[in-house]
Length: 280
Length: 248
Image (cartoon, rainbow over all chains, first blue to last red; front, side, top):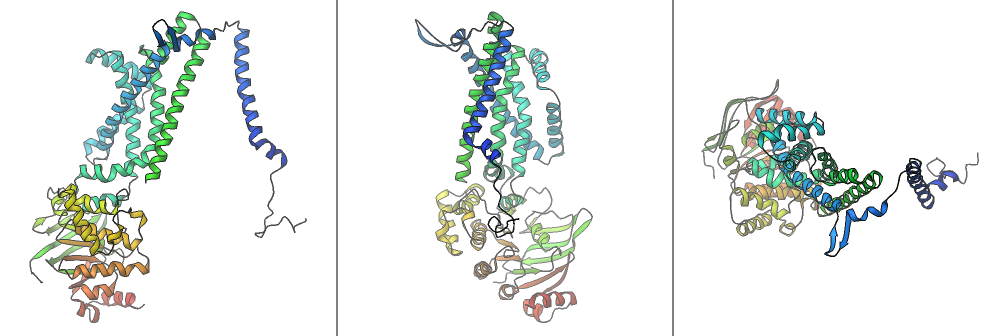
């Protein structure tokens, strides 16, 4: 073995990876491979549709997104659906956060009853499929408390996500060092003051990453309320399809709309996270 | 300065962690203005003892009175009482999300309801007292350990409490920073404040203590003024301990 040149001082030879690996991991080659994969997926779905004799009508799609009429620019049906999706998710998110904080504080309260109630609630929500929860809120609780389907969907999403959010909050609160509680106590703070001025401001740093994931999750799971015909993006898509039979085009379009919205959210979330870690 | 009213009074206090008894039949009192130094091997219960005084730990039996108010689990008065008792921790426990000045003023503003401007004037005065007035706008993480501990002392002072508790304030510090903290503590002792201090710094103890206490296995073994404590303690266990730590 010719050890002289390639042996490093620590005794191990520094070996370059084989040429074939270097070829495949270089950036231009990666991009080409990536494009090939995407193209083959698109092509095969297109061919599949062709072989079914599917009649592509992409030219019909733009009018569901926007249109120019004599009255000027107008948003299409899908954009109204998207707006409903966004307002629905946003209202549910606010409610879920408030409710989640309440559950987390109950759980951490140290009161035996509080802890038990919180755990029962968590187990109840976590062990029921979201779809069943939607039916429960609309068909069972709806008539009892006399609210409409839009309210039902907000309440249902809020309750479901509050269980997940309360766990995020609890983990964030527990991640703050024990000494912080003791220091806050020793200057005579009440429990509410400790949470407000010392513990919660510090736990935000721990909560932010899972919380942004939860926001994205909320927007995605809002699609499920289409089963009770709330006029959000997915429901409107279904309606259009039942009128026009353009299943392929509409579902592709809806998938892309969700993707764009969620990507924007994710980018925004990572900006917030970055800013927060900088100021810390 | 010796006012002979006991401000802290333990009467047959016991404390258990599960089956382990951390404090055994503790009876001792601290007078107003008295400076007490508690020492002993680790696990002897000295931290537990000092943490009982402001209710960070709750004792299980016996009676503990601080400033005329009884301390017990679930006491409604404990929050008010804690305002009269400052505490300095081994790990400093500064609030990392607040600047030094905010660390000092949050107690006075939120707990004592003092106007912000007044609290800031007071905070700067106490920062001056611990010799770091120039660090007011920094965050704790930007300071050295010794500086952080001095901020923690200033934070306790800002509450203008009657009693100051020190729980091994120099144990987490690099050796070259210990003296800057001890110097501040000696200066404080000269102001006549009631101090209870758990520490192994015997030079400091000799300088400031009115009373020395030696604890072992949850019991108080020896209580004596420093002259007697260091030269001629009654118990052998205490003598042994002192020999070990004064050897170096």
